[in-house]
Image (cartoon, rainbow, N blue to C red; front, top):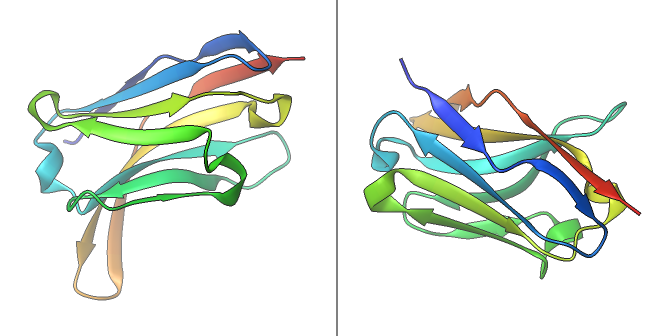
Length: 120
């Protein structure tokens, strides 16, 4: 049973920073990739940042230059450093890990979600 344990969410003023952490119950290399998604009220869940097992990263356009995804392999932990936070960054943030099977099959694992609130 894969578990993703998240921490680091909370309330921050606009312009401030937060660092989210996600620790897996197994080796981080057992996944094809990991990432962070977010969902604001009334919106669909969207990818914020991802990192592949090979270390390739990608970001949503809205967070490029402000957010950084990284990992600590020894700790089986992925981080999301969020700087210059804006009110529109407020959402529930979810850690994701996924495994790819062949070219079309993907299985996703999710953390419980954390609220990030940005006050203006």
